[in-house]
Image (tube, rainbow, N blue to C red; front, side):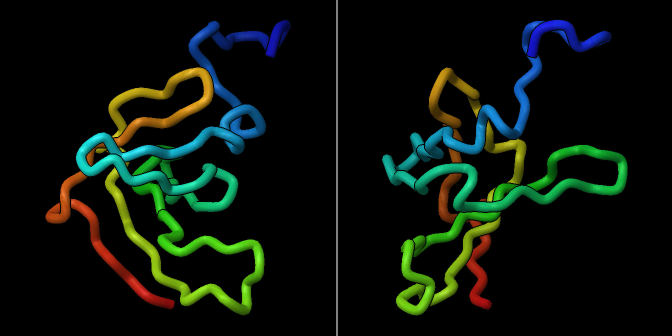
Length: 97
């Protein structure tokens, strides 16, 4: 966003990245868009995890609520339309709500 005092050109706003697709280069899996998943931010404002909705479906009644916790350290690149992660099975914690 131009004109915001104190921010450099490398800053991305959530409103920009919510339509970025998440791709795991470890296994080639696509995890839909950031806006269909979630981010965990600690009390200091640091990104800690991406919570991936494994079976995202527009129709919530068909969703089986399986999620994968991926440490933010697994993010390798934030591109112009994608977020690239590199997470193997050992780093991805599966949960069900």
